[in-house]
Image (spheres, rainbow, N blue to C red):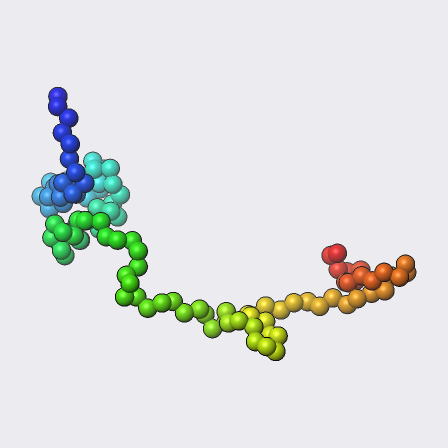
Length: 113
């Protein structure tokens, strides 16, 4: 038996032709071609919308026409007054205690230092 070499586009087109023939269910065809049902339905819908050209892989990068993303308003930089970047973040200020040996310690007996 001679091995036959086929391309990706040939296999996808063969899948769509088999699918449109309505001889097998989508699940059976997807198992036979080694693809998921989601991929099978995607190829079929692209073929119906764009024809054979719809079976080519689409670029994964976002289009250059897309607007640049703006940061969320709560992620603004701190101002000169020293406010936090995110007003939802609060810090617990622990009191400073004087120890018997003259050293200082931040926190208290109930603190996890």
